Length: 408
Image 1 (cartoon, rainbow, N blue to C red):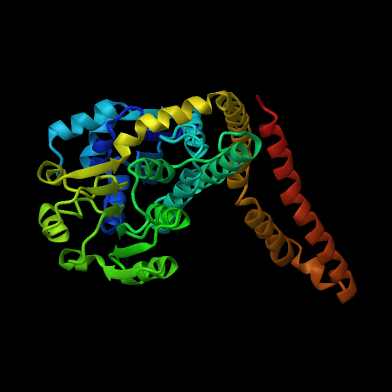
Image 2: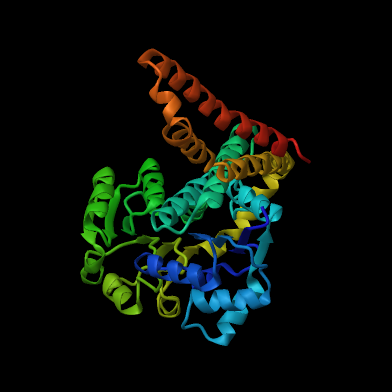
């Protein structure tokens, strides 16, 4: 467990608007994470980025001290200045060993989330692992940790009331929208068709909104969502040419910079002087901040959902202790899993060695004796050797597992 480390930036210790500094654009993910992993000498690396957190999970022997963090963030973004690197070091939360696992379990159980009880985080953790695993960044330790993490999340949601009457960032944003008394015929521009926006769009359709236009980098994905919403679909590149007007923009992309620039917004709004609503659930924000200075916009964003999220936390406070008990039990169980896995890895060469000994015995040591045996005797001897070979492999492995897993 000592090798398992987490470097975290969350809504608890970092301004949500600043978390966007740590976002990596999808197109740069492979190169930047491979470079980072190699630069710090990590065996494994997992990167998680959501609307209110960025987490780095590592398998590495080195202690995570200020010297390590300076090298880490210098490699994370080679264009950063000393000021930006120092900001990262000051805002980073570091967890090691048991505490790292406890933190990861708490994240997937949503008790560390901006919206306690929301289930979306467990999917985000799984998707982040699948992506990093596909890129060849993870290995055995993180694989086992994530597998157990998902199981812990499911156990928490099943055996506590933490997710009763579930809420999410999407539901909080919708609650703020409805408070504005928006008419059902409002014209929506949906920018991005990822999980968050898809959930938001389904929420809007469920509540009888029906006028949707979807923009996405991949047109096919926009068309899929548009079909479900009975709306129109366009490539994101067509956004700056759209002139049919809107009342509400819902945006959440994975872009590293603003998608809705002042120039694009000016074309979108045209001569319409009515106050608009923008629901921006992206980190970093998709809406350029300059737009708020020049236009009448009611902005619903992650940072102004925090007060509603605090109310949600108070309502679920009594469930937190039950969640923590489940987490602590699973930490102890995971330690036993790691011990057993160490035995498996240590003894993975045993079958090969036993087979080598068997081949030497048959073909060299007792070759003459075997040459004088009849076919039936050879068959019986072969069965005896096969039986003993299996036992020589399985029995010591079981004994070693029992010894290690029963150690305190």
